[in-house]
Image 1 (tube, one colour):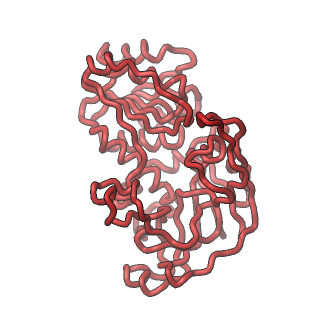
Image 2: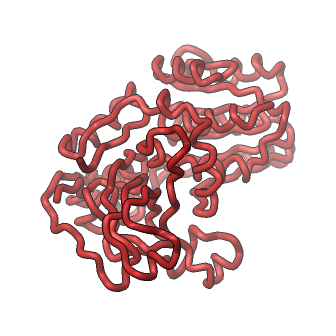
Image 3: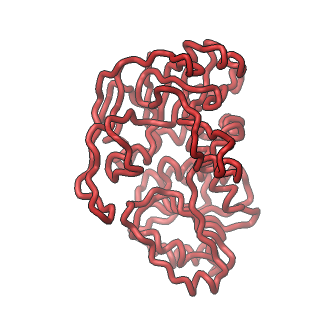
Length: 353
């Protein structure tokens, strides 16, 4: 079967600065066999390209080994199943969202509510989204409703939606808050859509790409800023009548733009650094200014436990607007390259026929 594979590791120096980015290739790999320890075998229908996949290749994120099958935002159809998969309520033909692993629920991070830090994650014998088949345990899978009225392909976006939901929960967005989103790409547009569905906030989006500012307005943002032509701090203060923003989401991951988030912070506000930054980047923070504003810095990864919530939310999302390109697995490295083009927003990939 075909698979988009991370084959050449990025080279970093001792400070984790990138000396040479890695590379990926479309390869033929063996189709996984359902093992007795697996819950089920899944034919992957769709997988979405995520900035994390790109950063693994370009920045050496997480120190992932090679070869490694890329992709983690996926949905598919169960084609084989073992008894413990059936015992969990699944059957052949079920369409499911598949997460990379599931928290064990028993280790110290799990007991403290941090499933992403699980020390003993539960997973199948073969995982990867940009390929044709994978195996999984029932704990990793969530059924896609058959009567939602939404094309099942959009359910591959449950994983980034779970991350966006985590960012909203941690920031505690309230009615009347001024909210700034720096970046309206794949995760930024999902975050924007979810913020607007929650309602009550006054949302501004800053993005240098005209198509993405237009997308933000189409989704319902009240204001947009072009940081290439406007002073984002000055314009943001004008929009908020000098108050600043109660919640600021940096979903761009651009080092030179990151400090402005703190300059725009309202009294008692929160800056949420959501994006993946280069591993050698250190944020310059004036702790006195942060202290004087009683401000807060929050980071976000994702939250496995949000899957049921976001699956229920998908029919209300404007995912047909957020997804701006659909490709095929056979497009190979072009999928990766297309993501790097700033005009593309969210890309989903059809992985099997």
